Length: 143
Image (cartoon, rainbow, N blue to C red; front, side, top):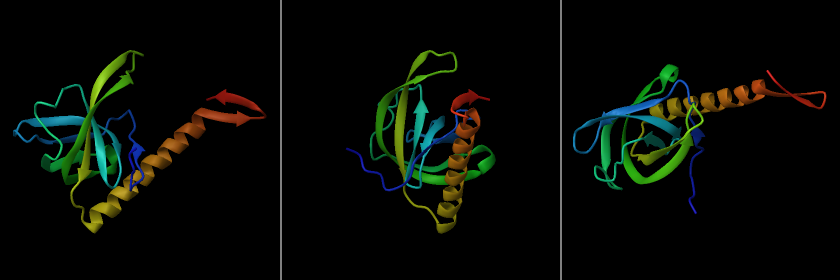
């Protein structure tokens, strides 16, 4: 059983939020951010990373591009890798590799700013759910 210390939010599918930097072997990467919390993040890639990274490896000066919510530069440590199945926009099942990272250190300013982004992403998710499904006079209507 996994225990979390921070609230984790799934990031929107569109526009994708991205994470860029260099792997431990100095090759550049760009992965999609799947979820984020004050403690760390989950990234999706189609590439098998087991031959490149191991739990405990540290990536420094990684840029998190959170689209309209801003940029963060962080150091993070790989916690683990797993395989996830996701349904793409065409309804097809894709096998993705999920990389789980924890943040190593945040300044008070970064923590405050990231918390605001997480609250905003949650607000947008709730707003989107409420606008798609409305219960009106006992009926469920899709707008």
